[in-house]
Amino acid sequence: MNWYEKLKQYFPIEEMKSQEHMETLLKEKGDVYYKDEGPHHVLMYAEFPSFLFIDYVYVSAASRGQGLGHKLMQKMKDKGKPIILEVEPVDYDDTDTEKRLRFYQREGFKHAQSIGYTRKSLATDEPNSMEILYWSPEDASEEHIYEQMKKMYEEIHTYKDTQFYGKSYEPVEEVLTYDEDADNTNILEDLEKEKA
Image (cartoon, rainbow, N blue to C red; front, top):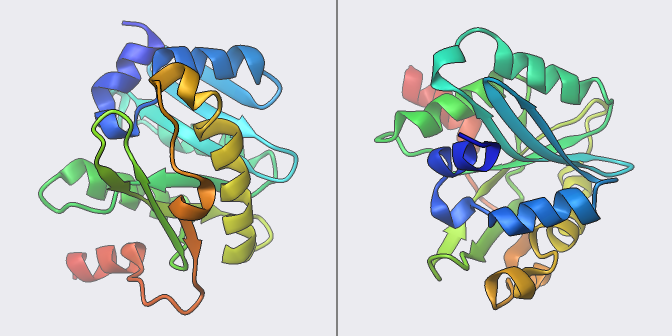
């Protein structure tokens, strides 16, 4: 099974870029967009001068619990830049979403509660809300993370989108919001309450 098939089996359709989109990013944005692949993992990420964005991370079921995810995260942290990623809101009926959040919590990621992120899936035409998690060596502010997310959205997510999907994603200002007074729940703290 090739790297794209592995990702497609693991991630919901509304979160998946097309194979053509990803291959074009690797080819045309090869100085920013990377694939780190091994027999038991696929990691797709973008590295900008001041931050990293993890687009997809897949670790095979057979190798889970062996520290591979931790090694991949450590490799990213060793670059010494803030790391941003999108996660599905926790669904306690889907243990995978909870396990993923617990993994990132163990890795020291924080939930950017003041950042709202909802974009319409071009595959399903339905709005898809995600939560933003980040790790930062120098305790970056959520406002800083928000500015980096906007850059990533425009350079990676919407790159040649009309060419690949026949239509374009909404503009960044309709997708990402920043409100430091937002009364959003901290999904990582909620995990602890759920466990208690």
